[in-house]
Image 1 (tube, one colour):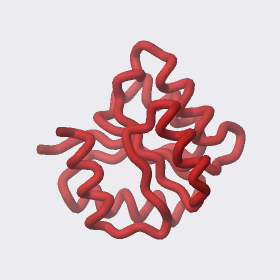
Image 2 (cartoon, helix red, strand yellow):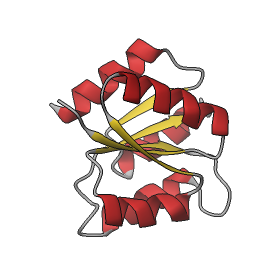
Image 3 (spheres, helix red, strand yellow):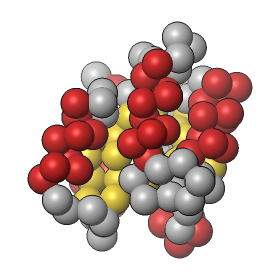
Image 4 (cartoon, helix red, strand yellow):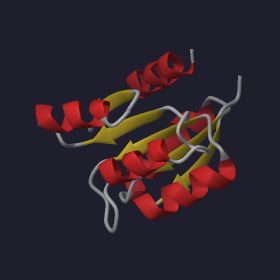
Length: 121
């Protein structure tokens, strides 16, 4: 089944890699380069799931996650955090703010697809 996926990351290489992974599996991909853009696009596009980087300019991923979870129209969208940050406190904070899952960079294509499948069940 085709899903609409929002990818928010300030690294164009990561965005293109995720776009390739998801579009190769017949999913529609929307992208955002920072947290503000991710919030706007989430409200307009109503994606099935959001892949959200933690370290981004202007508004980081944790603040973006908080705002997504506090708005009625975006609060139920599952968010998978994707980041190079490996501190256990970052991981715990993401879950406490409502993240559905967490993926560390560099990531494996099969892991990304498995996590997507898991949160959409």
